[in-house]
Length: 301
Length: 301
Image (cartoon, rainbow over all chains, first blue to last red; front, side, top):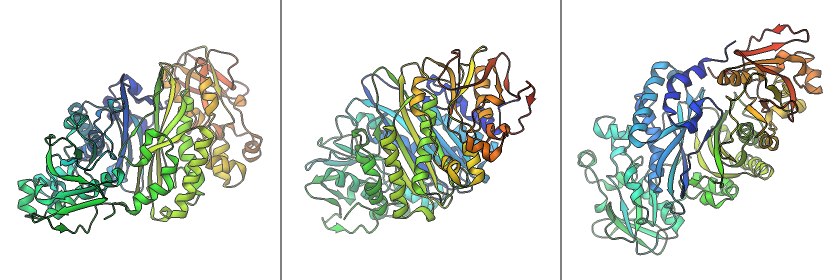
């Protein structure tokens, strides 16, 4: 007899080549070893992307793979961690369960492995009557005790954000053009994240929307965050699409940039506000008037 | 404003109490730290259980939680690892997304955390239009370099299996009684697993069916495994249900026992056969005749 079945064949054909570390046992075991580094903590994060919620089922498979991986690398970056490895749990819907799809999906992962220096450790693959979903668990390393947390923001700190905000939300609204490509394939500042150790007092990746995510920092830190709307960096492409509608940009979500606080006045990102005593997040217009923020960002319920 | 939404409230209410380790940051961060132990490797495994495939959607929520956790602890046990912590990724269908359900689900996890000495590190929770699914990623420790692998079986080794085989499959067929409880809540030999380091040359947890899983060992080890049907341990309850139908027991799956090979003639489990040169798995009857095994165990495609 042969113990092969198509599930195992597919894993061997498309995913085993991505498992380049001896820790992965070539995906031939039930388990893998998490890579350790002397003097470092291992940061772990997990996020799932689901067709119809986080991407379109007919998106190019390589972009789905990259988004699934990058939303996790984004979390690692915001914690100051250097990415190392990941687990993949793939729930295939009938529409996605063909080899051409899997081949393109695996190619997207392979491209990003080379780009970010990460490797597949293991995971599982199954069929689902529900929508296609891709769950990734990513591991990274930070110097021991130095993970950048959410709860370190202190009154007097400045508030920063990397990149530009709202592009992905604009892309989702426009459904075409370079912003839509950004929605499909986010570009988290992975290299910058590591440099924020010793600079950032608190950090979070912007996934639910800038205001909502700063709200997480404010709440966990027990502080108030004031954001000046005009200082929120926005791309020319987004301004062409949404004009000066900052509110829409800061509530759109899916940015996968890093929002952080720091006592340093010259941190390597755009300064958009400050931390005060109190609670919550306030968005101010150019005259210092509060802009009401009706939507606090995406939640699943 | 408050940054709370119901998703975060539910996590705080039901799951934060399970995150008893400082490595989990009380589930208030995007990430957690994987617990390390000096002189040990970190074994990681991930498995997802899905309503309608691995359990019934109307099963008691605490049994769903326990099954989801235990199928992962079973993998760790088969690798010789002592379980330490886990991540939970919960995809709730509309039918399961109520607080009573979540409360019972969390209580099931809490009971098992106390029983197995593990703690919740983090995860995520989302809604799905598809079936309820529970993905768990579990971490355990083994002395460095000593993880029990699939590929170490050698001609001359004996073949062993823990517990009794087929109970869960019988329970699924009967849909009632103590065997059905075993299907719902497996009882992997977690404490025994650790004792197999230095004894087992190869091991796997029996999830796809005894013959199929031994097939994985045979294939990865490049050896042939011969199983004597009469020596496969079966419970009285299963014999009452299926009589002497060994074939059904060894292809049923969902056992979550450990099958292993060892050069020791007196390993702490039932000896059911031997490893030979060659390939594949052979099941022999009392007269030494080969029993044809038409079904090689469960696969997802």
